[in-house]
Image (cartoon, rainbow, N blue to C red; front, side, top):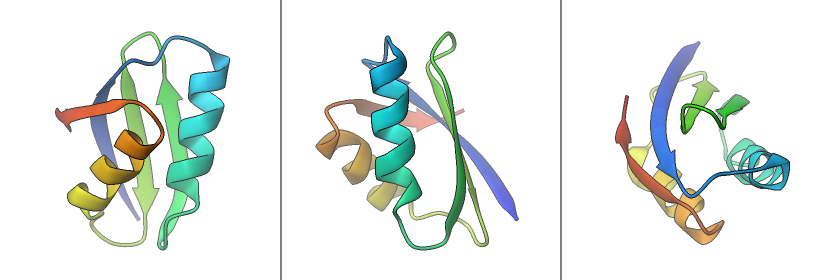
Length: 70
């Protein structure tokens, strides 16, 4: 398993957390998503190295902005 943490801006509440957890969690190969609102981080657990472009696209479509890996 690989855990990759991303910085995501625009998250502020439980709805943000639920939205991103669901959207990223539906991607192939993703086995877990942990959203830390306080730090603005999203940690993605997957079997292999995640596709950063796909994660960024998914975050963008959900209404947030992935600003890079932490």
